[in-house]
Image (cartoon, rainbow, N blue to C red; front, top):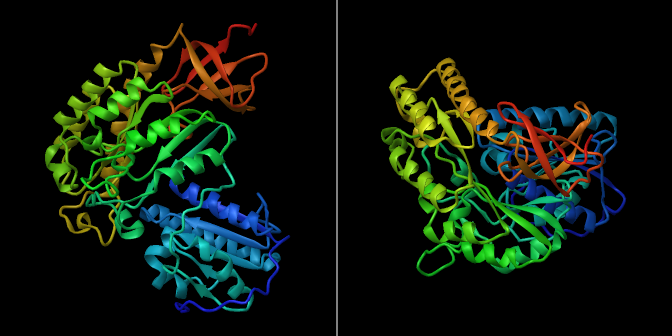
Length: 455
């Protein structure tokens, strides 16, 4: 494999060449992809939505779970077929090669270029070598340069801002520290510049593996800087509102709660991954809290910010989990009354401490437990949403649902793609604008309504 840094004399004119990119996995990956697309556009490349006919196809991969890796490999193999009909080069980037390059380089000869999670500034250098007839492995050769310019792939009215990379939490089921490395906060001034470069954005969604830990690697005493960053971003007139995703419960400080409560630009919404409620399971996961401390946090948030929407995620089928543990988690859900939840079956990942824990739970039992928890939360969410019937709420229009023949948008209780939506009728609605919608009915996860001027 090629692993040294060669001297490159640019020979290929990339201006006019067509590039298509598939971004798999999380929205942190999406931000990386958007920055790579800008580098391509800056070099004169043409970005295409269609894979067919593209000169270069790029796949930015996820490797978080077995399922993610299968999806990535299948996507690579599917895209390799286009090389028989005109595609010149296939590039694989991101988490999968970062962690598994030794296996991938030999097992995927269809791929011309491999880049890791911090190698994007080497993209054209690697591609130049590929056009010279070489297969290129540049994984780990980049410096992780920070780019403030992006080609936004979301609708114009909302965008993601990745404020940090890596993770120091070392949950026993998670590969992220082995893939992305230690937690690294991006400088405030760089993030402010990146946010400015996005232009007018109604909703800026802050993401990291743990947004609440932002700045702890920068300050001398290890104190977080999230509130400082929130205030700097809120001062930008181009940013309409800010939403927080992935807040670790033990890092939700009183200062942060006050900032969310008192800052009019911060959406009263928090995504707080709790993962379980049983102290024994949480300890095995290397999570710091308990079901009781989580309930105390939820109660405090609702006391300080009565209207707050709280979303969470939970893992079921973690090694040693019993039916009694699932009973306890279901009871926790009924006590917590969270706005919305996602449930995931534990994925046994080689190289994590949980991989060797016994007994492991069978997949069929994991699936049954996940369905049971979804059913419990469905009733909670359904009851919560029914409380909006007859009320007017502010809805950000995301576009048109042609199948339902109505507009679709979100209120403050919903983040894009992971939460429910509001379907509404209106004489005319514009994407990226807010509308007062009278809610007329609800379902398990969605709301339905109309504007006052709709007949």
